[in-house]
Image (cartoon, rainbow, N blue to C red; front, side, top):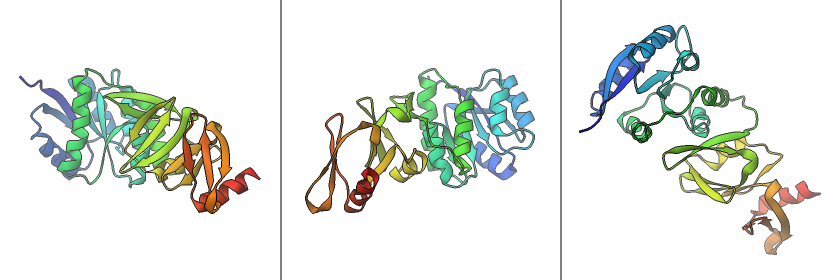
Length: 252
């Protein structure tokens, strides 16, 4: 028999709230046990109902979604809903937060619910307040260079320090992040990472590659005016002509 998980929807816009509740009624393993339209109302409702998952708007009257999470004695699994533009996607992915970018439809909700289901089936939730704060800083477009981020690995969250990342490689719709000899797939673009990583350490050498200079062993000129980048682990990457010129200027 399918276990039914209790859910709460927190959204200050009546139409958006009713739409989400309507979509969730079709999810057989979720039961919406209440809704709230403000931060203080949300805190009281969540503390009273103790849901397994909360769909939480970030911009709320009274308290923000972040403040709601901070005020909870035991935060449940949280799916954030936000009207931030697509710049927020990278910030939320890097913090490994489940989110819905408004307006969203059934397909996007289904993808978020798949993550929620896996987490609930594993019997866990993860502390989110600090990760939300970092994500919101990134979403507002004034972030400091990224020092750490999270990746999803077989249903678990793994913390990666930026200093441990050796290289990043574009892989279709994902980026392959190589750190400490392991590769992790992150659903972002290489441009997203380039905008957030420290440019003094992380250098774009090709449309498909970013390398951490701390892990570069040698730079070798090759035919065609290009430079081959040799990493400490033996990986060899060829920089594009444009990036090769930039690497030469970097090493002068």
